[in-house]
Length: 111
Length: 116
Image 1 (cartoon, helix red, strand yellow):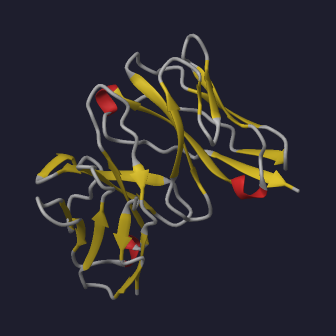
Image 2 (cartoon, each protein chain N blue to C red):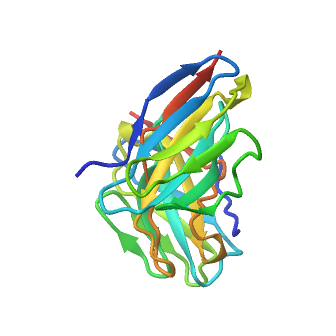
């Protein structure tokens, strides 16, 4: 399984953009990059995913580098409710069906 | 459009009893996944099922744990003879998985199991 590396914690001011980095240098060509978050002890919430191209939805944007070895999740206007643990996960290919959660990044949004 | 449903949300069992956790996938989803989150730890994959089939059980403990996803009805995660170390949050996810394409899993709210 491809592994990911994320900073353990980040801070962001409310209303500002939150940029969460992720390294996945061993990603395979048919593996996707997924982002989930977990608020308190709730069930993980799907945010966004991508293969090669940058993606945007109502929650966030995902920027994937051309070599696919890293990506950045962007929350354009962070709110207090975005405080959560954010997980970057690589899945697909031989790890099909199994999401391997790392330690994630604890994002704290300050007033 | 109901999401993934899990019940019960909280379950208390005494050591040696059985625990049954239920998961109803999102409408149109035929793939179910179970994950466990021990206190202060990350989420760990347990098992992946399709209707009537276990696809990947590489994360399941070898003893006392079993899972099924019958043709009709919810998926069941069964823990026999529970021990205190089984106390955890158990999350179910579902997808409409198509091999070769993105397989987005959507999670339920979880069942918090407490073993006394």
